Image (cartoon, rainbow, N blue to C red):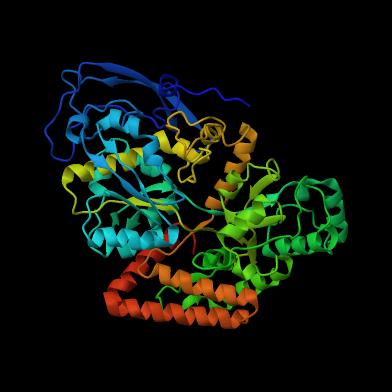
Amino acid sequence: MAEKKVSRRTLLGTIGGLVGGLVIGSAVGWFAKPVEVAPAATVTATVTATKTVTETVRETVTVGTAVPGVPALPKIPLLPPGVRNPWLYDELKGTVIKSVHDAFAGRILEWYADLLKEEVGVEIGVTKLVDIPLLKDEGFSLLEAKSTEYPLIQITPSFIADFVLTGKVEPLDKYYDAFYGSDEYFQQVMPPYREFYMKYAGHIWTIPFDGDVHLFNYLWPFYEKEEFRSAYKEWHPERKPLTPPETWDDYLMQCKFFKEKILPDDKTIPGAEVLWPTMVWAVPPWGWAFYFDMAASYGVNYFDKDMTTALHPRNRAIEAMKKWVEFVEYMPEGVENFGGPETVEYWLAGRVVCQIWWIDINEWGQVPPVKGYLRNALMPGYPDPEKGKVVHRAMMPYNRTWIIPNYLDEKTKKAAFYVAYHVSHWHYSIWNCADYDCGMDPYMYIHMSPIGAEAYTKSNPYKKPSPEWPHTEPLFPDFDTAMKHIEGGLANLSVGFPQPTFPGTVEYQESLSREFQLALAGSKSPEQAVNDAAAAWEDIRDKYFGLLGREQYLATWKEFYNKMVALGYI
């Protein structure tokens, strides 16, 4: 259906200041800057405060001049998109901000160039796009050369420790602290993203603009068609109902049912040839994360508490690998060589009933023949006999964040932070996550709320379309579809398991991915694959003991481990 565009004026009255009190007040500028008096003007805006995902509180506040006798607030206000910020404009105007992104992240800063220029006078330059495998090397090269061309460098949190250890990345604590409302911003960023992907060694180093998590994705007619439901219940030895799987054994039994009783001649999805029950991303560098969707639910951690034993407890790690190998007979031939292109192509063509993938696979899936047939659900889990319950874990691999080089002049660092922070903030990011052209995914509670779902059904009111990013239509056709998508994401984020963020992370990920691939191919037994992966991990650990010092490296692990305990993962 045609969607009416939302004007900036309309937006200021609805979503311009989405969490209470964050866009108001006067300020003393950056850190020790003398007090500036706001211009003689008053702006009224409606502010919506999200206290929980489902509860909202609205209030009207007045933004404007300092009132005689009332002391100025000690922080800078963040005003709605496109509204000139008088506390920052004169200081930051004329600064040129460019970013390096992976090619799939695109040019989102350029979408908002005109608005950001109106806000604080910055010029947004052309984004440099690099292939994902080259992203880390590109960032290192820029820092090594002390390049000033790109004040914002995208990294994935897998790299955070390695980049911090260069000594050339700016800690961002004071920049966040400079803004009124940053506490509410941090409350909106979901704890795993905030604690693991923004913080390291006691400081904040990154600005998030994308939040990734794995989900169980499925073609819903195979689970809701009465013919299949009745047949499954009659076929199942325990007469279980056909619903999205609660456990990995349920998932396996459903794959067996679909292979034996339904596929490959089924015509449930018009125009699709559904041939296989499931598939998995197996190749490096991300195959490890799909293995760990299962392993983490079995209670496996990267190391034990003291970092003496990798893939601990080992017997559970082996059990998880064995279980994954049981799925191979229900997957396409050659699945051990499947990565991004294959899992996306097969899914969008409707060739498999279900699969584990990142949250955005069903956003891309708004195309025939699968459009209208896609759903997601909580990741299957492991019925842990020690805990007496089914434990679910969903990996949170990849993610996109910005870092800022510390050798830039202070004006450029401030301007870079402002640009990244405002685009990260819900003012813009609620639309980034919902935009047809954008691969950014939710990382804030508000992204996963009814307010976020509503954004999925509207055109992005801020984006400046271009030939490269031409789409203005909504991503989802209606609120119910969008809300179902978000609810699946929120369910998995509630059990989200963080990727490693300690030095050497990429080496750990790649070595485990190779062993996962070999186990799926039948080239190694599950036990041998896990033991070989663990041996490689302990070699990598020992290498970093030598490079950084044993105590320093152990302290890094303990910080990570203690956060996992605090957030309930252990």
